[in-house]
Image: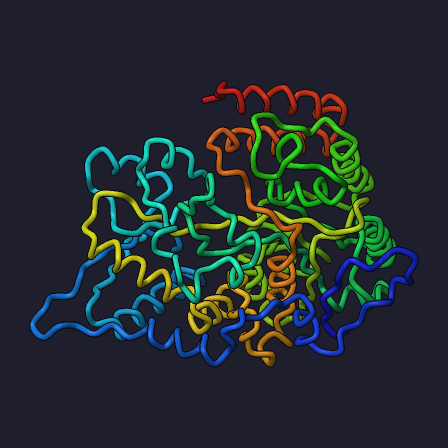
Length: 453
């Protein structure tokens, strides 16, 4: 069966309304390409950015990047890009240290041993509140690459606090569902589901037609639990997806999404595992569909090893009529305490990173969606034709209904409570009503300053 990307379809249309004429068509309608400067001027400006002359006899500015990507595929791709940067920017010497920067950076601040550049996770609050980071805003002014019109929506707002950009998304992960095309064909499923109702119907059909196969595997993590909740009208915080001091899970959206997964689990059509286990079972043809992220897509292909074709679809649409998604992943931050030359060198690398050539190499190697519209437009169509997981990632990245996690450090504990109560409700350890009530109480306590630690 040909891999297709399925968009939420309008109401009152048949299920087979959407068929791509080609991969290019799947993203072209969503692209808002460049500003009035035009493609040629944009390309010229990028070329000028990549030039890095060095005065005769001057030593290169040395900077260190702390990053958490290790090994295949992201760590290897990052190392290759760092080497390319150093080869073309003789006035800068970039060194990479693979470490858990999100936690170690905090400890390094009092000792004055921070790197010039670091990649950290979502919770910027612990760094922003004590003033440990420089804002990227002053650097971004006039940039032809790092600007709102070029960035995908969630990439631009990720790490933004009070209008200041403290963290620039470096690896954009979004949730998606991968499926075994051979199993879909055997079960008589001719197109990927575009609604949660259709997904449940397909799971039941696989169970009936393919005895011994687990229809669906899901990861117990907030980025995978919340898309259904949001597509049914829920918000990450009360009345908002980004700002607020209270959660709002005990709602009709919470009841609908928690009950949905509970029904699948009760019917033996759903199993909950870690991402590694899901990919292993999927590759061994034990599961027909697995929920994962764009970061796991390349790993899933490796687990399959070419035994069957892997299809992909975005998290389905809910009662709102549209799909929703959570953008997650590491982002570049600029710790204070370094020379102006080092800050400028760090910015030179970051701006270079967001150029289409680097973005597209990164996406092809890792499965992460590009963060810029220019890079999405430049993705090789031949590559996309055989990588539907990347196409769906780009679709979700461009969607206005894909939002970043809140940056409040209190929300970290809210997510831990969400994972626990979602699991308890889905597996029947608690009623849906009790789990949502507990989640709301605990979440609001964390948002008001209480802690489970």
